[in-house]
Amino acid sequence: MLAFLAKRKILATSSATAVPLPDVKDAPEDLSTNSLVQAVEAIEKAHKSLPNPGTFENLLGEVKSVLMPSTFEGFRFDFQRNLGPRFAVNHALLLGCPQIPGGVYQFGATTVVGDGPEPTLLRGQVSHDGSVDARWHMKLSESFKMRAQAQLKQEAHASQAMVDIDFNGADCTANLKVGNGILIGVNYLQSVTKEWAFGGEGYYYGKHRKTITSYVAKYTDPSGKWTGITSYGAQGTWQLHYLRKVSDRVRLATELVYNQPSGEAASSFGVEVDLRQTRFVSSIDHTFKLATALECKVLPQLQLLLSAEGTPAADDLKFGYGFQFMM
Image (cartoon, rainbow, N blue to C red; front, top):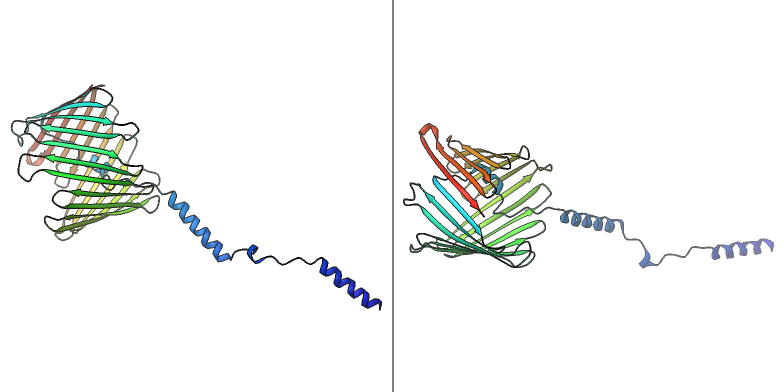
């Protein structure tokens, strides 16, 4: 009898101290589900940290500024006058160029409408021969911009007009072009990692019923000292570009172009030296053609321009002299 009562006491005590089973809805998630959620969160975090790759059109802007100095022939004079915080006029004169007998004179006006870092820009320019160039830049939203450009000439079928819609995302950029003559173009550039960006562009010429496409890849060194760009065009042309920042004042650039169908190749090398008051740019290509431009700030409002281009071995040299005056 005593043994039976002791057994009942033990069973009662065990029932009172038993831990209740957890509810199904409070049960922990499967380990595979947790891993999937963490992977998605890591991808989203890495996606948000990707840099903006810049626009497709300006992808080679820094490289070309070193490889293609702003050379000219003859005498050049540019004058810009600010008539207020929102309006300015400019005069441009070019004389002594054999390709343009009689010289060129252009008058332009620029006005800014609206406030903010990117206000609406209106610009017009007319030449002595009656040619008119008009531009309209407008910000549509935080991500979209509109650019319209028209060139009106007296020659038949020589006038052109084009409208661009630019999209600027956190890690990508895109552009849509529509021009007269049934010209439609699109391009897209996407950052894949902090170093790599890939993109492409395509044009459709309705007048000739022809489509042209190209693809590009850009690599930026994590230190920011150099950039490499490669592109492939529809005509079977490979292009390799390299830009090196030697110091805060010196930059080097190289270009290699190879046409696969013809087997022809071309190359060029350029250097840029910026000394605050003076900017020197010089380049040489595979034919030993030299191009050099020197911009020297003589006064805060006056800048001296010197230019030289040609092939010394062939005794073919062109020189240019000019001034830029702003007030």
